[in-house]
Amino acid sequence: MGAGLVAHNKPLQNFALDNLQAQAYTGGLTFIVKELMHRERPIEGNGAYKWHGPFKGGGNESFFSGHTSLSFCTATMIYLHSHRKWWVGVISYTMATGVAVSRMQKQMHWASDVVVGAFVGTAVATFVYNQQEKRREFNKKLLIIP
Image (cartoon, rainbow, N blue to C red; front, side, top):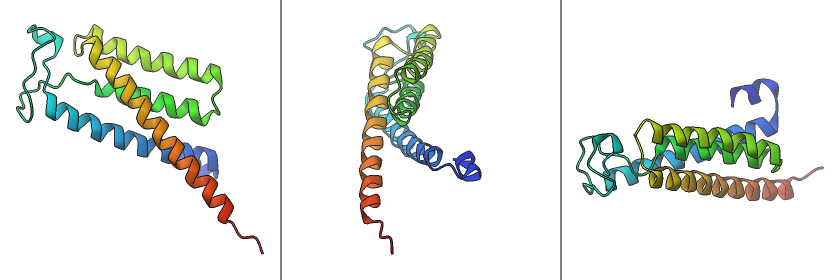
């Protein structure tokens, strides 16, 4: 966001603000679901079906992957703000997928954790982008030139 302000670059400012909002929503949703579910991580060795339920604590917060949801959130926002250029989508989603795979390789998440995380991040970013685009279009129509 700072780069957009310094450079007086409105598209960069819009991207930064949209991404910040989407990251906040995604992070909040991720936190709430983790606190409600308390699924054990693969590294704990108790299987994929060990869930502790709401507000149990103890670090059992596998479902769903926060790293994955936030990386797909940013990848989606980059893609949408590029006006859906296919090559930008390939690069940004490949990087986000790399984050998801690394979370499984480190045995911090099950495959279902990263799939749901990817879906949530993508959905939230798309929602925020669409809402902000509607707002920007509405504001353009309100512009009064003397």
